[in-house]
Each structure stands twice: as structure tokens, then as C-alpha cells.
Length: 139
Ligand SMILES: Nc1nc2c([nH]c(=O)n2[C@@H]2O[C@H](COP(=O)(O)OP(=O)(O)OP(=O)(O)O)[C@@H](O)[C@H]2O)c(=O)[nH]1
Ligand SMILES: [Mg+2]
Image (cartoon, rainbow, N blue to C red; front, side, top):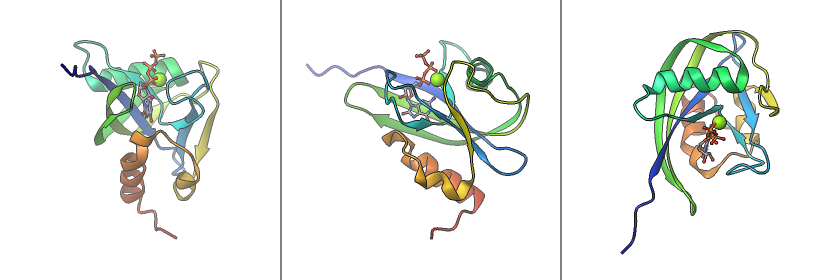
């Protein structure tokens, strides 16, 4: 019998600066999909509203407080070792200055440069959605 892996529900934020840049974080080498860039976020707890999970994760990982966000896209992806449902939000306003609160490298990136970064495979449709939302022209 083939067992379904439990799909891990993840809240992730595409954080926009006032100047229109996007915050990326580098996943630690030892993490799942380590060494690749991510949109900060993490696992939704049982019974937790997704927007609450997003705010909690961004507070834990970056020390910012989300003040405005909107849903962008949901992506379901099966890796060989785990299945994820990425619930991705645009964070359009926040307070605080983001830092790598867990020692991770963080970087503001202009939307035009997003495609230069290496992301986990599940992020391909997310990057497309961000580029479309922000009106990034393909070169
Ligand atoms: N945060 C985040 N996770 C992603 C992205 N893309 C992607 O495939 N994932 C996957 O989503 C899963 C959960 O993310 P996470 O590792 O951030 O979870 P977490 O913050 O709760 O970490 P923890 O398990 O160390 O407490 C991981 O398997 C990760 O590889 C992304 O852009 N951002
Ligand atoms: Mg995380």
C-alpha cells in the first residue's frame, strides 16, 4: 500500500520594502532545501490561522511585525522526501527592520533580479506570480 505523506502547511511572506525591493533569506545548508533562497516563513501550527502563522514566523525569523498582507498564491509541491503546501502572502507593510534573527543571511533584492537567485523547486510558480504582480518584464 502506498502511503500519502502528510502535506506540510507553510506560510511564507513576499516582503516588499517601501522602495519596492523583496526580502530573501538563505536557507541554512543543513535545512531541507538548504543553500537555496526562500521567502521567509514556516510551518502553520494545528488550528492556527494562516495569517497568524505568517506574522508569528516573520517575528521569530526576522523580528518584524506584519501590519498589512494579502494572499498571493498557494502552491502544492511534492519533494521526494516531503510534500508541502506553500501559502504565500505579499507583506505590503510591516514595522521593524528585518534581521536574520536565527543567524540566516537576508538580502533585499530588486524584482528584476529575482530570477538570478536559486530557489527550491516549489518556488517556481511563486517567483512567476511575484514578477507578474509587480509587472517585471522578461528580458
Ligand atoms: N519558508 C519557506 N519554506 C519553503 C519555501 N519553499 C519551500 O519549498 N519551502 C519548504 O517549506 C518547508 C517548511 O519551511 P521552514 O523550514 O521554513 O519551516 P519552519 O520555519 O517552521 O522551520 P523549523 O522546521 O526549523 O521550525 C520546508 O520543507 C521548506 O523546504 C520558501 O520559499 N519559504
Ligand atoms: Mg522557516
